Length: 72
Image (tube, rainbow, N blue to C red; front, side, top):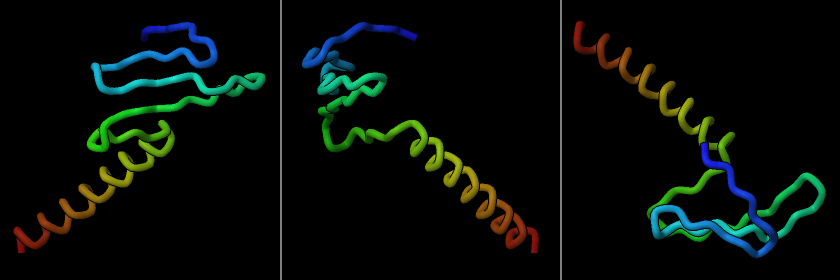
């Protein structure tokens, strides 16, 4: 993991097309601004994990049903 220190209004760039800027710092909370192309999905980690879990569950349920149909 790369750890960087940034101050308010400072930014970092990822892969030449994603820019993350520190917008505000209040106590232990940091507000970030993210500029990325529309085709690049940006999620909070907890939301991303929920999406991944839902996708795994869908594959498991659909996969079992597909196997049942295939085997008769």
